[in-house]
Image 1 (cartoon, rainbow, N blue to C red):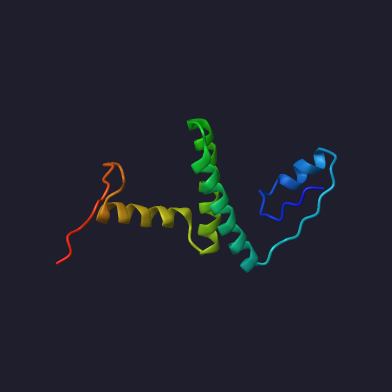
Image 2: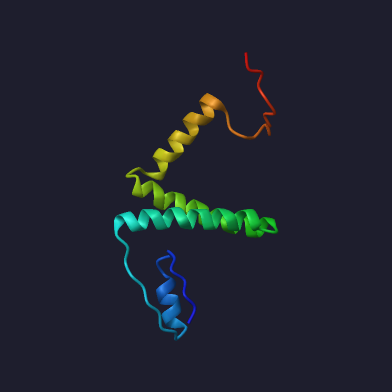
Length: 108
């Protein structure tokens, strides 16, 4: 029996059950949940980095975005609040659309 020991999406147990397989789960404490969300975010970002085509990349970005939504709730803010913060940073420091790559800065 494969051992997973990782956070999964809410409907995964039902999908496993419908396939006729047995499984074991546990419900996490708030602290465990936050830690597992962070681990899952790293996993999904790595899967994005490993994506071989645009379709796979978009699939992984959707997973990353789902985790950002969940993490926003953990931090007691709405995704709109996160978006407001993103927009403010964009206004004050810009985004990444100009493809600027900083090489060095002279130190006085």
